[in-house]
Every structure is written in C-alpha cells, then in structure tokens.
Length: 467
Image (cartoon, rainbow, N blue to C red; front, side):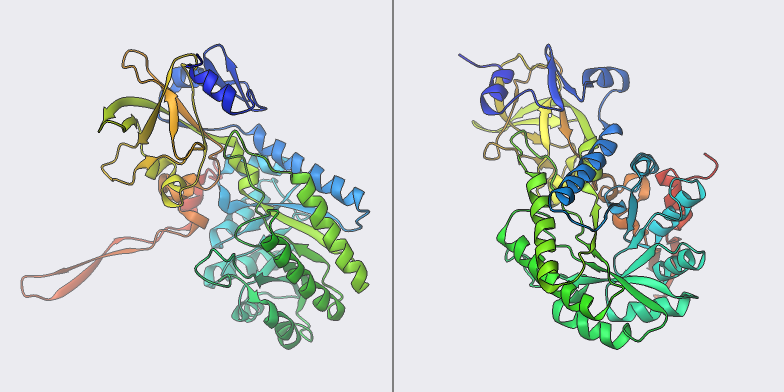
C-alpha cells in the first residue's frame, strides 16, 4: 500500500519536474540543497534564486521572437520589467543584465530609474514607460527625467488632466502613450477599469489635445486587463476592441507605432500547472497582423510589462512546523514558526495559491492537515492547495522536525507585507498626527512621524550610493 508522501505526489502529479526533484528524502529546488539552507540559516527564511529571473526573461524573448518569425511580423519586441512586482536592487540588477526596459508605477520608481542610470545598469536607449495615476511628485520626477535628456521616457496618459500637468513641467517636445480603460471581467464588481481612458473617448481626446499640439507626440497605445494574458473569450474580445482603437488612431496619427499589451503571463502555482505560452503569443501576434493588414496600416512594435512572470518564480519561503493541535475529530492544525499574513500576504488577502511542499521526510507516511500562522488572528492560515482545499504533509512527529516550503512567491509579497517599511507600488507611508485634549478640553495635535522620503525608501531597497 502506498502510504508515503512521495507516493502521494507520484500518483497525483508528474514528478520530478524541471525545478523540483528529490535527493534521497529531501526536496531540491533548481538543484539547491534546501535542507542545507535550513541548517545554515534556520527558519523562518525567504530566498531569491536570482538566475531564474534571467531564465524567464530569456524564455519570453524567445517566445516572442519565434512568434514574430513564424508570422513574418515586421515590428520589434521590447520586454519591460514591471517594477511594482519587486523593487529590490538585487532583482533589478539581475533583470537588467538582459537588455530589457522598465515600467514604473509611482514617483519613487523614477528615483530608482535615476539610480540605475547613474550606476550604468540602464542607459539612454532604455525605454522608461511611466504608468499609473500621476500627481505632483510623479509628474515632477517624470519631467526631470525627460528634461535631463532621457528621450525614451514615455508617460502613459491615465486621465485627461495629466497631459496638461506634464506640459507645464517638461521643457521640450516629448512622447506619450494613452492607456485604454478596458472593460473588466464579468466576475468583477465594476464594469470598467479605473485606469486609463474609455474606448470611445480616446479618439476625441487625441483630436482635442494631441493632434495639433506641437509639444506632444503620440507613440503608444497601452492595453491591459486585470485577468492577464489567458486563452479566454473575454481576453480575445478585449484585444479585438483594443486593435480597433489602434487602427482608428493610426490612420489619423502616423507617429503612433507601438502597442503595449501589458503584463499578465501566469506563473506556476501548482505541480499540475499547464500553460501554452507559445500558442498564446503566436495567436496574439497573428491577430494583430491580420487586423493591421486588413486596415492597410503598419503593424506596431510590441511592448510587454512582465512583473510576476519576471520575478515570481525566483522566490520561496521555508518554515518549520512547530507543533500540531488536534482541535476536533477531523481538524489537525500544523503551526508554522511565522505568519502567513505578514510573510505571504496574498495567501490571506486574495486567497492566492502557491506551490507548497515539504522540504524533508518525503519517505514518511502522510496525513491531511491545516496550516496555521503564529498570530492570534483567525485569518492567519493557509488551506488553498490543489486537492479541494486539503493539505497533505508527512505526519507530525515531535521527535522528527518537519520543514515546509512555499515556492514561486517572489512577486509582491515583500512590499504588500511591508518589508522594512516599504509599501505596494512604493506609495510612501503618510505622515502620522497624534490628536489629544488637554485638561481644559482644548484639542491639540502634534506630528508623530513624517511622510517617507524617496531616499529612505531607496535605502531599504538597497540603492544606497555608498554601497
């Protein structure tokens, strides 16, 4: 009878896999001795396997190159890294070894771009695509970049006011893109993305504010849907609507030569994961070419902004099972030596699934359990695994320590978890005011902490110029 954990995995999935294999009783990840890491550093720990970042960039570039060759597509392909997935210096240093470009989301992102330029990680030929909702500091930073002659900076207009704000700050003619406010998936609570300008409003906006504007040159149309690049009727329908806008604009705007299809390549979240990346890109390139040929316009250059795909599969976390609590006849809780809320916040906030496997004891018998975090919050648990929310692990034995790993956790988890004081999209911690009453009932206020500065945030992320 097959009662070992290794038997369960072998009868449920194809195993070993490209990144996972066993060395006797222990799991290896890309040939990394995970138990060796545990013995050297202890738990809990997080790790980033840097070569995986370059591997995925090379893979995506190859996929687009093959698709363009197959379809005899005459446009160019530009791979941008979406920094909001992970802003850390070690991630960007690895990513920019691969002749790629950058997409920003907020003001402090541009400060990072300036550091990368200063240190030679990127150069004047690197496209800087500035996305997101823009207000004063972000506008100022974009303007400084363009005024300092980084001519491949392209702010993507998110709303009608941004163009005027940029023009007030930028001293010369500059290039822009326009983001389409796509229709959201029927499962969403709202119909249209809050980001960008509606399909029907883009052409009137171009005619009114851009067509006769000597200071602005429209170069890019930006398209992205929240569900990412997936083979669904919804995705193909939105892509067709986007291409109709591109064709209409292109016929009136000869400088428009690029289509940004955003990010959204899925990453592996289960040992059963399957996704035909080559098929999807072949179809996207083919559809763009067909629509452009029918309209007798040149095909656009293609930009992508892959974030999770770039960095997600490089990351992992390892915990020790501290104790098992038998709460009733059916529920056994294995308690980890950390918190899911703080170290893997997406598992708590959006029920995101990660690959979860034991690091050791694969030849032991297994049991069905629940995983709990250390906090006293009832939501600090993880149970979103493949088998109908069940988790199976080697049986708890207080005499034989058990370690578990969560894999492909490299995107978003540190910023959403607030690592060292950083936040999602590098939106700074706001100033904090204390308000009290004195003995006469008079209200008084005092400053408890200032808003974070760019230098403080970049220090946390490893961009200290002295290092």
